[in-house]
Length: 199
Image 1 (cartoon, rainbow, N blue to C red):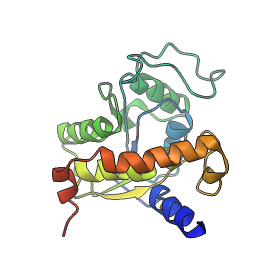
Image 2: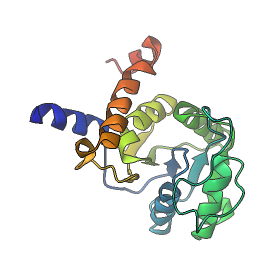
Image 3: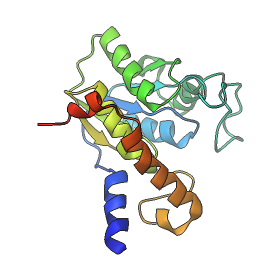
């Protein structure tokens, strides 16, 4: 059983040390910790620009508001993009360093629309730091690699909801989240998309 847990952990919880890159890309969502971390990476000089994206929840049909730190982020945010942008600006990231879109409803669209934004700005991104929830890392990486097949992604995840690679199997919430990600990694890719990874 120990080997199975280790295999799941090593597959789902992808993590790389940050390196100098052309851009920081933040997967959409409602956790301010992700854009806060992206802002810290930007301030440390790892990349000159930050890509953010996100419209409304595909399940709810609206943006439900910050998942944490509501006392700090009190704005009326209609989209994930508006929320993330506010977090970045409050953290000291200038407007000109932010590239974003407010249409995507799920992670795959985050990646596809980030590619559209990069192309629209004439950017060739050779390396990018991918900021996402730690238990969401593998699926994010798969989507962004599919959208940017020639980009070297360094996954720089952040723990949220108290779920980490060390403790995910110790709570029902952690097990549900991680096994849900494991299932979706297979369910949400078409045969054609998976062929891109074949030698």
